Image: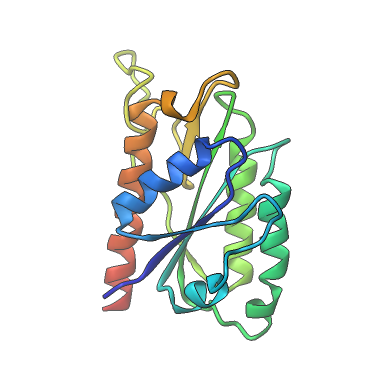
Amino acid sequence: MTQVVVVYHSGYGHTQRMAQAVAEGAGATLLAIDAEGNLPEGGWETLASADAIIMGSPTYMGTVSWQFKKFADASSKPWFTQQWKDKIFAGFTNSATMNGDKLSTLHYLFTLAMQHSGIWVGSGMMPSNTKAAQRNDVNYVGSFSGAMAQSPSDSSPAEMLPGDLETARLFGKRVTEVAVKFKA
């Protein structure tokens, strides 16, 4: 059985809702980074046993949250022994604006995965970019590097668009499919 873990930080609940959709699609375990940037007890062991690690963070000021960065810095211990080498990695993010420099966040997650000698999986989805496209279509934000969502700054997590959440779910499904193929 392929073990997939979604490790994420969420400041206001939008990224958590996205993480839940990714985990649903992936059949994954959720591992939340708390408000102080720490994993729950047993979190590092959960990541060590995973075949795939999907990382998520809101985009704040063009990159990951400080809580996610604290987790990333602490991952230097498994990095030193190359504990996560050849694991499948992927990433997702959310921000208040349509662009919001989300690609910078995905690049940060990609770089972290590469430092761990991991194998990155992109979205595998074509963008909804025709004149007929609607904001609620799958991959409307148009990312190939990972899953992206947009939540207005005055919206609640319950108001996230079904299209963005379906994008997250399909993304999670793809990562698990790739992990299964890679493990075979």
